[in-house]
Image (tube, rainbow, N blue to C red; front, side, top):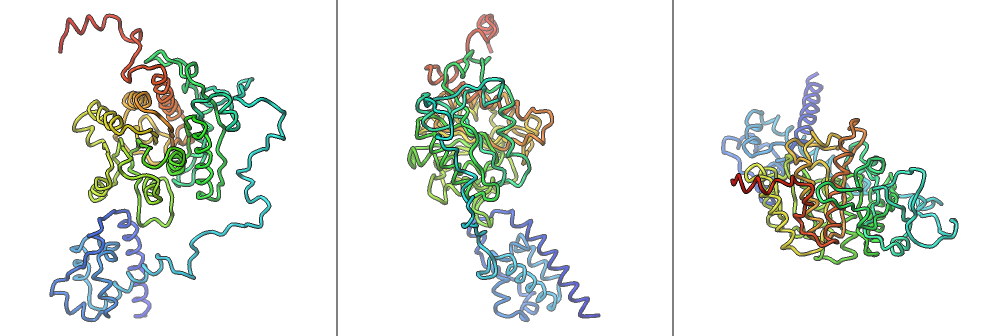
Length: 475
């Protein structure tokens, strides 16, 4: 009975430790904190003397113990309230959990093997050969009978269509929903095709991007729904394929893990050091270190850096406000050269100030620009249909002008909009605002083509008596 009670206590302790470990893993600590040696007070000498050298070394390693006790003080308190026998059980439980959670060669599988004998190994991504189709001249194809396309644009199927049609913007869907763990982002392209508002006349500028730009719907990129890694590679190939024709790939996701292949594909074409990325997001997406996966919606930037496609100095982040990064995470980002603008900065200085800083930084950067727009940068009151909403975000009235101005100011070479989850928003306001963001981008590209200043607004859209009012009512 005594042994059963002891075993039950150890099991309960392991469960409690495992729960605490899961919560503590979410913290991001700097390198010094991870490797510091814990010093214990003399009052614990008697309890610690019963430990083996291996157990004691484990207990003193803060990179191990911080998984179970977030501070040295918490660890000391946990030891002080236990007997010497319970301390041994406590350390044994920690070491058991670590052994079970870590990778062990021969016990654990590092990857899922693919069936290379399958005759359909590449069937998910193989395109229909042109010889199967009626013969036609290369170029975009206008569809009839109300078949929905992105921005109501004609369809292009091949790079030859893009070249022959002198296409300037190719909007392509990427229905990937494996990097987030939340349902429905894979249906983002479908809902955006059936939502109006991407093209047509723009009230602010009286510019219609459909008239000024050669825009096409380039279909959806094939996704292997059992393999994020294979999908990533194919998305990268298609983005590169579009960019090599000189067209701007505008990718509609899909979750934010897509930022990895989108940016990598552009760097393939334009070269490392020539691409600047503006990342609109409530989250910093520089997750690193403890994840067992090499790509998810929380780590595309870190993986781009890890694989040597970009550096931190290539990034400008806008709208950060989630629980991460921690203070040490922010300091790491500073060391890597990131430029970032959190909602705390907006609260302190106001949106107009922050927007001008972003525009100035992008202009000084002077490089070709890719914009990665996670819809959760907007407040959840505007964007209900997204997987990881965070309160206190931007409004559409703030987001639309900065996207329009950035696309008018810089040479845009890519744009992605991600994390649209239509099933989570029966009111379709998420799709409505997402379409407005895409339209703002297209209007900005058209403004640049027409030679307009980034602050251009058509005079007829503003009260004609406004100038007189300002003169009569100076601030």
